[in-house]
Length: 461
Image (cartoon, rainbow, N blue to C red; front, side, top):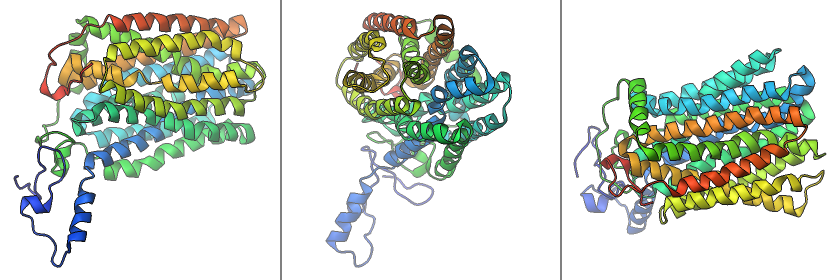
C-alpha cells in the first residue's frame, strides 16, 4: 500500500478500498466490533459501481429523446403536411450523427475527460429539443432533431458506456456492459408511455419540452459524481490493480481516424460493422421509428402502440443484462448468430400480428423482441475487446456508427416505403432477411487467440 497525495491509502489488487484492519489505519476511538464490521461492509461497495450507476442515469436522460420520433411522425405530418419521408430523413440524420459522433466522443473523453464531454452533450440534446418547439419548416426539424440532438446523443452513445467500463472495471465487464446498455431501454420504458400520453392529451410540443428537461436534470449528477478515472479517487479499477491516471490524449480526432484505418485493414472489423448495421436497421431504424405509425395504420391507438414499445424496454433490460452474463461465459460469435437468427424469424411474422387491438400473439412478439433488442451489444463489445485491445472503445464507436447508419437508412426508407406502398409490410420482410444474413456473418468472425494490449481486458468469446 502507498499513500496518495491526499493522504489516503491506495486500494489493493482486488480493486476495493482498503480495510483499516489490514492497512494499519487506526479505527475511530471507541468503535466497537459491530461498528467496525458495518464500516467494512460499507467499504466493500467499490466506487466503480457508483460511477456505473451515474452513467446508467445519464444514458436514461440522454436517451429520452429517442422515445419521441415514432410518436411524432403522425402529429407532424398532420400539422405541417410534411411527408413521412421528410420526417424520416430528419430521424435518419439524427441516427447517423449519433453513430458517427460516437468514436470521436470516445477519443474526446480521453482528451478532455468524461464529465466535460457528457455535460456538453446533455446541453446539446436539451437545446435541440427546446428549439424544435418553435420550428415551422422541415429544414429546421433536420437541424434541431438531426444535427443538435444527433451530436448530443452520439456523445453519450454506447462508446461512452465502453469507456466507463474499460476504465473502471476489469472483472464483471460483460455484466456491466449489459446493465449500461439496458439504460437506453430503461429510458424508453420511462418516457415512451409518458410522452405518448402527453402527445395524445396536450400535443407534441410539451412532450419535446419534457425531453429537454430530462436531459438538464441529469447534469448536476454528472458534474458531481462522474469521476473520469479510478485514480482520481485513489482507487484501482474493480477487480484490477491500481494504475496512475494517464496524461490527456492529444490529437483526439487524429487518433480516432488512425484507429479506424488500422481496424479497417482487418476482416473482423467489417463483419462486426456489417452485423451491427443490420442490428440498428432492425431495431432503432425499424421498430423504434416505424412500429407506432404502422400499428396506428391498422387501427391501434398511439398510446397502446407506445405502451407495447415500453414493454419492449422492460424485457430489453432483462435480455441485455442476461446477455452480458452469457457473454462472460460463452462464445460471443455463437451468441450473436442465435440472436440475429431469432430476430429475423420474429420479423417475418410481425405483419400478420398487426391488428386494432392488442392480442396474445402480439404480446408474445413484444416480449420476445424485447429480450433480443440490444442483447447483441455485450457480445459485440466483447469481440471488439478481443480483437483490438486498448483501442476497443474507439473501434466499438466506429462499429456503433455502422449500427446507426443502418438505422438511419431504414428510418428513411421505411417512411418512403409507407408513402409508396401504403404499408410497412415490405420493410418487415426485408429486415427479417437481413437478420438471417447477419447470423451467418457472425459465425465467420475469426477468433483471436491472444488479445492485443493489456488495457483491452479481452473477454473469452
